[in-house]
Amino acid sequence: MPPLKLRPILLLVAGIAVILVVNLFSLAAYPMPHCDEAGNASISWNAATRGIPAFDFLAQDNALRNESGGRYMMLLAGNVLRVFGSSHLVHRLTSTTGWILASILLYAVGRRLFSPMAGLIAAMAFTTSLNVFGASHIARQEIWVIAAALGLCLFYLHLREGHTPWKVALLGLLAAQLAVEIHLMAIFLIMPLLLWAGIEMLWRRRYSALTALIAGGVAGAALLLPLHDFSGLGSTLATTTTRHCDTPFCLPGTPAALWDYLRQNLASFAGFVSSAYLRRYSAGVLLFMLYALCAAVYSLFRGGGTSRLVLAYLALSLGAFMLLMPHRNPFYAPLWDAGFALLIAATAIPVGEGLTAYLSRRAGWPGGLRPYGGLLLVLPLLAGNLFVQAYLGLKFAPRDFDGYLDQIEARVPPGAHLMGDAVLWYRFHERNEFTADMYFADIFGQGRGPDSAEKLAEEMRQLAPDYVVDTGAIACSVDPTLQSQWYSAYLQVNCQPVARIDDPWFGAYGQIGQGGPTIIYACGP
Image (cartoon, rainbow, N blue to C red; front, side, top):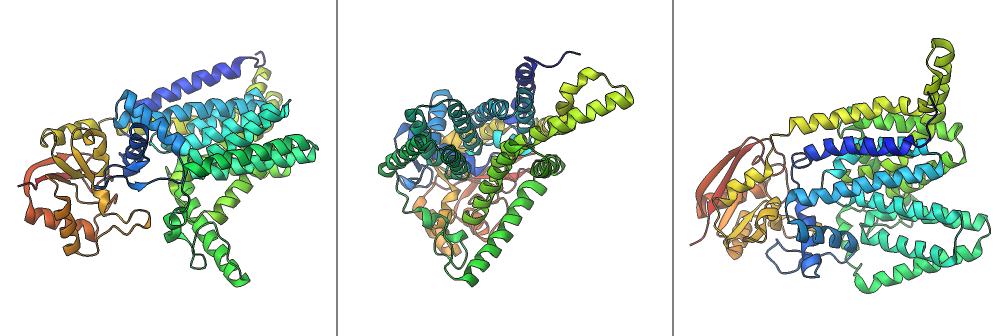
C-alpha cells in the first residue's frame, strides 16, 4: 500500500461531506429551539436592519442594547436572516457554516504545525466532537469564536515564514477586533495566541515585528472604543462574582481574600468541567476527553516542542478562563476542542505508527498501513461520535418545530399583539407585534422579574397582549417557577382559552421538549 501523498485533503473533503449530511439531517430537529437562539436572532436582526444592537421582543424600544461587543457576529447573522428568511433553520445554518470553516482552518493549522495527516486527524476529531456537534446545531457564537481564533493562528503561522511589518500590524488589529466583535469569550482564545506571537518575536529578536504587533493591537482596540460602551459590562456579570469582588475580572487585595477567591473559582470551574465534559452527551464527550487527556500526558513527557507549545496554549487559555471568568456556561465547552484535537493528532501519529509497525512484525499486518496508523488509532473516536450524531438525528427526526408554529399561527390573527416563548420570534416578529415572556426574566441583572402575583398582573395589564401562548413556564426557564404559576393563574382569570395544542415534543415547560399542552389565550377586549 503506497504512502499517503495528496490523500489527506481528499479524505478531509469526503469526511466533512459525510458528517455534513448527518448534521443537516438533524439540524432542524436537534436540539430543542432555545431562547438564547431567539435572543441572538432578535438582536442580530435589529443590528442588521436598523443599526441598533438591541432586543426587539421585550415590549420596550431598544430594550437591553448590547454595546459591549459582538457586532461582526450580529451583522453576519442578521444579514443572513434578512436575505434568506428569518427562520430557525436558516439561523442555525450560520453555525453549521462556521463549523465547516473551523474544520477546514483546523486542517490547515495542523498541517502547518505538524503534517498533512495530523491536520486531517485533528479536523476529523474536531468535526465529530459531540460538543462541537452541539455548537454547530445551535445559533450561538461559540463556533465562530473557534473559527476566528483558528484563522488568526493560521495567519500568524504564515507570517512566521516571512513577514512585513504591515502584515504583523494587521494581525494585531484583527486580533483586537475579533476578540471583541465576535464574542467576548474570544478573548480567552485570541489573547494567548497574541502572547505566543509576542514571546516568539521577542525570543527571535524581531523587535520591529513585535512593535508592529503591539501597534496593530492598540489601533484595533482604539477603533473599538468609539463604537462600544463597556461601562455596563461589570453590572452585566456582577451577579456571578465572588463576595470579595464588586466586578468581574478582578483579583482581591488581601491574601485571605485571594485564597478564598481562588477556592471559589476552582470550585466553579470544577462544576463547569463536570457539566460541560463529564455529563454533556455522556460517553461520547468522555471518550473524546480521554483521548485528549492521554494526548496531553504524552505531549508533556514525550512530545516535541510544538506539541508542548499547544499544551501550554491550552493551559494558559483555560487558566485565564478559570481565574477571570465568573460566568461559565456549558455552551462554552467546545471552545477548546480544536486545541484538544491538535494534541490528539500530534500524539496519535507517532503512537499509531509505532503500533502498526509492531503489529506488522508480530501479527503480519500489511506494512503499507503504517502511514495510516494515527488515523486507525482515532477511528473508534470518530466512528463512535459519528454514530451518536446519526442516532440523535434519527431519534428526533419526527420533531417538527415549523409544524408546531403553523398550529399557533392558525389561531392568532396577523397584526395582533402576541406574547409567548422567545422562540416564537422566528415566525411572528414580522407578522405580529411580539413580546417574549423573557420580559419577566431578571435578565443580566436588570431586575425586571416581578416578585409577587400582584406586580406580575400589573405588568400584564400594562403590556396588554391580545393573545398569549402559555407552555407552563416563562422567562427562558425549562421548569415551572413561582412566576410561571402566577402567570398561568392570571391568564386563567383574565383571558379566555381559544385553543389547545398537544404536541408530542413541544409545549412542556418551554424548551424542555417532552411534549405537553400549549394553551393559547385571547386577552383582548
